[in-house]
Length: 355
Ligand code: ADP
Ligand code: MG
Image 1 (tube, rainbow, N blue to C red):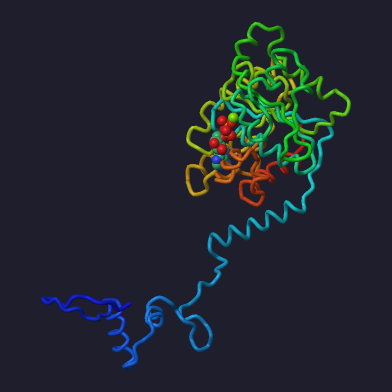
Image 2 (cartoon, protein in one colour; image 1 turned 90 degrees about the horizontal axis):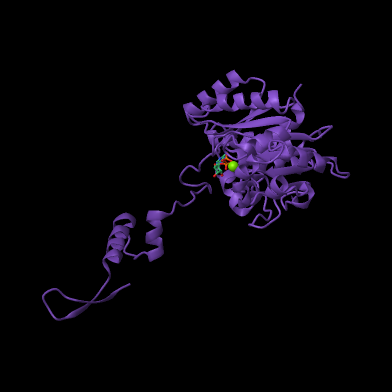
């Protein structure tokens, strides 16, 4: 906009155009060869807006959807997976399958696997019970069940002989999804159990009583273990018939695995002859790194029968979901993390009990 300015070296005022207007006017004159001053918007658009040409098409080529790009391939692959899952109905087991999800390494995806597998199975119509055996209570948080100090919990079942039915809560996530929560009290249970009678069998007894109750038609029990090989984990091994080991596709993945397998063999020999490592799930897979591929190949080489074909990718959606008290299945069902857990659940259901 024009304004009054002081003429250089004098006190006189003069009516001047601001510099930008002057430049635009000069530019207009040089390009249009016309004395007609251009409207400001007209000038500005010369620099910034690509007008359609006479045929109505854009002056610059519009980006063409290229189906061969990695992103397009990924999108069409996810669409295909969604369709396959939508057409899938999962068989229910003829009797309750009890899994303990165990790996003494922390942060490998045990809790995440318990939460999302149980949600995926419940979504398919199964009746699922999650037993949170980790004093941190992360599975209880993710399944949005009450687990403040003082809430009837797994601690009361194991230490105080309370019936499992009295502590089990319905998760709002899906119909048919239940959780026996863990409170911080459970942190003391390892020590309290040491002096107790049948200290390794306490969870197994309580769970069997619960399952034998009429009307308790449970298809799957998933037990979330703490990251240690203490008495709580031993209780889980004794109560279960199958072990699911999540393995993170990272450098230290296989370290400690032989110790875990040795312990499972000891339990099988002395406390629970029916226990088998039926399932290994590769988690937090980052397909961009060679290391992740190498770890996955190595685990498959050692455990060709047990490793699921489905691999759980590293996914932001999976890590965000618990902060909303949700599984990734209800948080963002179409995300790649959700699809992977739905596929893993389908594989587990179809494979059935190992022979
Ligand atoms: P654990 O129970 O073995 O200690 P968690 O399931 O708690 O391990 O996972 C450890 C952390 O990694 C959590 O913050 C969780 O949200 C995150 N996490 C687990 N699986 C994935 C994944 N596939 N992608 C991204 N983050 C993940
Ligand atoms: Mg955990």
